[in-house]
Structures are given as C-alpha cells and as structure tokens.
Image 1 (cartoon, rainbow over the protein chains, first blue to last red):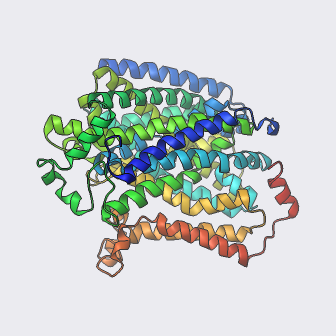
Image 2: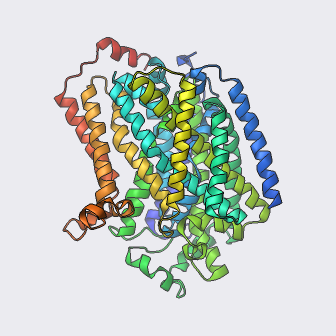
Image 3: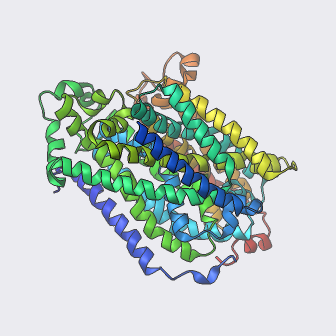
Length: 40
Length: 537
C-alpha cells in the first residue's frame, strides 16, 4: 500500500491521517459548544 | 544571499510590528502572563502549534527520519492524537477553568495553588529553569545549523547572530506580543511545509514511486557498505521499522516516539496557552486547526527527511547522513541542494519562525519559572514581576546559548537535537504529568502524595540520565568519572537497560508513587478549597 510493505509503517501513516481527521470532525461537531462558561 | 537578507528584514519588520501591537495592549501582569485570558481561538491554535513545533521538530527530528526512516511517523501520530486531541479535550478544558478559578498565570502556579503548596510551585519552577535550557539549546542548534548551511558562515557566528535576534524579540512583549507573532509565524511555517511536501513527492515521481524508490535503496549494492554499522544495530531500511529489541529500535521507540509523544502533555509553555482563552468553545475550535497544523509540520518533516535519501543518493551516491555530514544537517543541506533558490529563502524564514515562536515561549516560561514561581511565590519576595521575569529570561538565554555552543562539540552522527528535546520532554512527563492529571481529575488526593510523585519521577529520571541511559550518560561523563564506564549496567546481565530511555523507568515510578501516596496520606486540603478549584468543572 502506498509503495510501503511494512505493516507498522502503513499503520502509522494511516493513523496520522485518521487522527488529523478526528481533530477536524471534533472541531466541526463542537464548533459552537462550550460558550456558556466564559471567564469574562 | 541578497534575497535572503531582504526577505529576513521584511519578516523582522512584520514581527516587530506585531510584537509592538501586543506590547501596546499589555497593561498589567495578567496581560503579560496570560494575555488577559481573551485570546482569539485561531491565534491560540496557531500559537500552540508554532510553539509546539520548532526547528527541533523540523531539523532535528526530520534529520532523525533521514537516518532512521519513516518509523518516526509514530511520533507524528502521537503529536496529533496526544499533543492535540488529548491535550485540548482531556487536559485543556479543565486547565482553562481551574487556572481561572485559582488565578494561576503559570503551570507551576496552577499546581502550587491547586495543592496549596509553595514547595510544589518552587520545585516545578526550578526544574523548568534548570532543564528547559537543554530543550532551548536544541532549538537554537536547529536554527543555527540551518543559518550556517544557508549563508555559509561558521556555527559560532550563526549562533551569536541567531541568539541576538531572539533575545531582542523576547525582550519586547509578554505573551500577547508572543501569541500575535506566533500566529503570523505559524502561517509562514504551514505554507512552507505544504510546498515542501508537494515538491518532494513530485520530484520523485509521486507518492507510490517515491516510497518504492526509498524501499529499494536499502537493497542497493552501493548503499549496503554505507549502512553496514546501522544494520548491525537493527536498521532494516527507511520504509521499515527497525528489528524489535535492537539498539536502534529502543532509541526510536522509547526516546524519540515515547519521550516526546507523552512528554508533550506536561510542557509548561504549552499548558499556559490553555489559560489564555475565555471559554471551551475556543479550545474546541483550536482542535481543528491544531490537528491540521501538526500533521503538516511533523508529518511532512519526517516524510521528506526519509525521502531525502533518494535525492542524496541519486546526486552523490551517498545516503543522507553521509552526504550532509551529520544527522542534524540533513534537512538544511537537502533544502540548499535540491529545492529552488527562492524556496530556500521561504524555508529559511519558516525555520527562523519555527525557532523564534518556540524559543520566545521557552524563555517566557523560564523567566516566569524563576521570576514569579520561585522568587516571588515560593520564597515570598516582593518586586516588579515583569522586570524580574525579564532578568531571569536574560539568564536563561545566556545559559541556552552556552549549551548550544557545547552541543556542536558532540559527535555529529548523533541525533543531538532530538536527544536533547526528548530528554526534557521525558523529564517533564516524569516530574509533572501524574501531578497535573491528579490536579485536574482527582479531588481528594493529598499534597504529600503529589510531592512524593514529583520527587520520585524527577529523581529516577535524573539518575537514569546520568548513570544508566548510555546515550546521555556517555556525553555527561559523570558515570565514567565515578565508575570508569559509560553506564553502570554496562557489561552486566542488565546491559540492555543502557539502551532504554529514562522515561520508561521515571514515568511509571512517578505514577506508582503518586498512587501509593493517594492511599497512604489523607487529604488535608479543605472541602471549600476543593470546591473552589473545581467550580464550574
């Protein structure tokens, strides 16, 4: 896959992309949440 | 050369202007230390990312990927999952609220106020002041190596020039100025790395072709003699993990991946950023930009570092570390040799930005560690916070420059920058992480348990650095002086332990001591204080 044969490296490559996607999804899903606790 | 100087002057002008804007809005100690707790989420996310990622990550760890291969992508995964997701969601939200409840302005102050202990605040401040210069020296060396390669001047002159620019910049504003300029610097870094990734894959014929060429390099008859020593150490090619349990495997997994991957959670200069925003919404939004930023920084640096072997070999018949003349020179020489001249200028600015954004926060953290946490709070001395912090910063800068000067005397084949960074991150994980997690999540833990855990983690870490882990112990020479060998476990049945990073012993020691302390000592903090700490959480 992707020209790499070692499953450990493929796993790391895929996990990097998945974790970045998880950050994007989390950010979008909670975009307007957490407003009620300002330290104004 | 002229292009670089003009671009650098324009960059300095923008940075100075943004620093001045921050300086103008800094009216009191709260502004100076936590930006008045009103920083914009995008500014905060870019600032966190630019502080997290430095020349250490790009030059030092990128160079390590050039030597050890794509196994470093495990560190990128931890950088994103632990350094962004866990850090913001599990730690960030409670840190922000508790920091505000306790009126904490620094990481040691958060721990000290939570456990009502001047010792904890002073001890944490001392650790930061004494050991963060090692990390700062690693970042300085990363920038200096690049300036040396880019302008063709000596290491010493490059270091002095670079240190002078950083010192001037840090002197100007508090965290507000730092965070405005960080955001600008983060944008430069992001743009440069996007181009570098596209350029490198394109140059080597696409993603699959590039990886296949790198994989085939290991089998090349001309490469075999160059990597003979590494193969004996467990190296199996740049697209493979090293063989399990070999010296290179231990170095990659325990020092580079785990040391930095876990240690990021207890970095004082990053924790303080959670206290600069006004609500959890800012932290939620920062997770999105933080995740994208980190994958484009470390992911690209590690992939390009590994792939540089293909370019170096086709150009000179040598692998990257041999062609560049040392682990930490791989990325600077790759940029100078293979990318277009105009991009060399952009990348030069990106690296200066990466170093400046991290160094300014390190010096800010070191200055407040001594000025506020140790001198004012722990010793109960009175004085002007900003002035004392600035004098402490100056001392920290001098200490870091001396260490960066000495680092250049070490063996160039070592991963000097990566090792120095991992050493500090590992020490922070051992000394602070169990205490930090307990502060946020364990209501009735006693102050004694926290102190015992911090001392145990720190002591075991220091002992391993000086006497067990050969990579550091051999350079520090104390073990050799006392026992006439580079590690006390050398030539014994436990010789394998000399390969294992201190974090593998010190972090569990700290966790275990804290847990035992939790059951042994009764919590003496008042219920009212605990309620105050956890108010709104």
